[in-house]
Structures are given as structure tokens and as C-alpha cells.
Image (tube, rainbow, N blue to C red):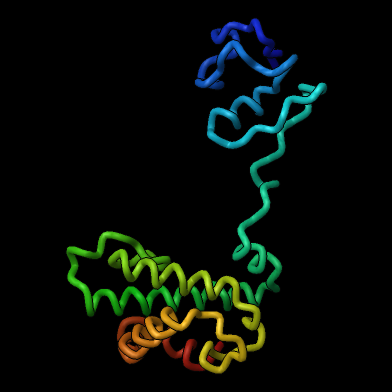
Length: 184
């Protein structure tokens, strides 16, 4: 490992280590991992006296709020949450395919099917609500849930999507539709 100081030429750092390296580095030494993080537009920690300490791994970054809840789920609830996200995404994609022209479907829903930008926003919101659901372990459907986590406008949009896509899910995704209806 090369110690990088204020006077270290760029060529001594090595090929591809850091493209944004200037001669004005920290007070004494900086670990190459810190420089790599700085070059990838991630805020680097201030240089410490111990330059040989390894940088924090990328997995040490705090997870997003939606993944925090999903990470705490027991395996059965995590599978159910993933299935619910997939089904709602399939319903949004089915609604979009039936109501919007093919040329406008430039985005991808969470299930991987093409959707228009407006339906992508509905899909992303529905998947986020499912990921943050507090009652996933106990509920059978969002309709029967005591907490209404959808905002009124989005609730009306998702009702419209479900009214259209619900009956059509039996022909397009029959197993997913039956499992969704049974609440399993």
C-alpha cells in the first residue's frame, strides 16, 4: 500500500485509483479507500492519524427505511411482502397495458413489465407502501387494514387500478390472483 502525501505524484498512486486526486491532499496521509470513495462522489470521512485503518464497507451504510422493515421481517412475512409487491406491480402493469398506448410505456414497473411514467409513479408508491406496511404479518388485504397508509388521491388511483386489473389477473396471472384473493 502506497502512503499518499501532499507531494506524492499522481503517477505513484497507481492506474485508475483516483481521477480527482490533486496535490492538496489531507494534512498527512489518506488511505486509498478513502480516495476511491471521494472519487465516486461519496462523502469521505476526515483523514485520521491512522491512515492504515480500513474504510467502512459499503454495507455499513444505513439501509433505506423501506428495507429496514423488510430486513426485520421473519422469512414467511418477507416472502409475503415480496409477493404482495410483485402482485400490485403486475396489476399496475396490466392496467397500463389496457389503458395507455404502447408508445408511452417507456418505463419498467417493479415486476419488470413496461409502463408509462404516470403508472410508474403509481407502481413505485404502491410498492413503497407495501414495503412499509406495519400489518403485513396480520392482514389479509389493504381494504381490511385498520391503518390507511395511502394518501386519498393515491388510494383512489390504486382502487381504479384494482377495479380494472383484478378480474383480468385471473387470466394473465391466475396463481398470483388466487393467492392474493385468499390472502396467503
